[in-house]
Amino acid sequence: MARDWTAESSDLRAPLSRRLLAVSVPGAFLAVLPHLSIGSSAILAVLQALLPLLFLAALGMCAVLACRRSFIPAVVLLVLAAASVVPVLAPSAGTTCSPGAPLTVVSLNAGRGHADASSLAAVIGESDPAILVLVETSEPLLKALAAESLDWAYTHRTGEVFTGGSVDTVFLSRYPLREEAPAVLQSQGALFDAPVAVIEHPEAGRIRVAGIHPAPPTYAPSSWASSLYRLAAWKEEHAGMPLVLAGDFNATTAHPHFRTLAAGLAEASPAWGPWAAGTWPADSAIPAFAAIDHVLVRGLAVRDAERFSVPGTDHHGIVAQLSSCR
Image 1: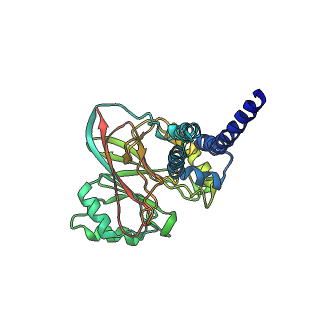
Image 2: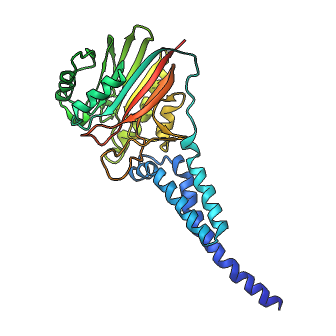
Image 3: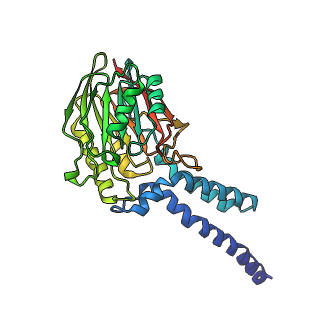
């Protein structure tokens, strides 16, 4: 009888062991995914960007297992899936201060200059930003924006766009600005320059602004990774005044490269509870799931942030409402 009972128990444990193995291997990979930084891997970067979808898929599998009364594998997978989002949901350590003069920043990837000027002008008119950061912009788009407004106040800007399309980042300001050396350069291995300027705000004071647009990791993973790390080093070297980094980072909080850059900065980007609101793709039947557009600040207080949409680009834009620190 003892031998029969032992054999029966072994038969019962075997399926459970197989189910545990089946969920533990993908679950463990999901848990370590946001921590992996293996050289410059396009595949790894894409999987990290897909973490929100992978997390939801894991939750769906947990529900299926629970319905089949496989409670132990369901709990194991749920714990591993939850571990995957811990670094993603962790808030960045931003500046804590009493808010002073209000300051609004609007940032948008303009889709190689194809963003609808009328719709974007309406967003600008409603939000009344002090600074407008446009990635993938063009001179025709900038001229169309000015033509849409009866009282175009953004007469201060960074350099002229010569090529148009994906390589150009420009920001415009209501107030005088002084250009500085770019934060990263194509000569340093970056696909796109990151222009920098100091804005002379009459109430908030001097604010350094950098327009961010590293190469997509699917196109140039080495350039993408090195640009983010160079920006992180540049950020540490420029700590003398309030800082705004805005644009299309082509990276989410699931990428360790981005978390290195964002360390010590406050995220002034829209969120759904503890989860960053997706900004890409904005022109698809699939809801935007990848939060790759950001406004990061230091030395400024974050009051609010919201997402907006305009036709002609596959990115949602960001309206970041900030203020100086008293």
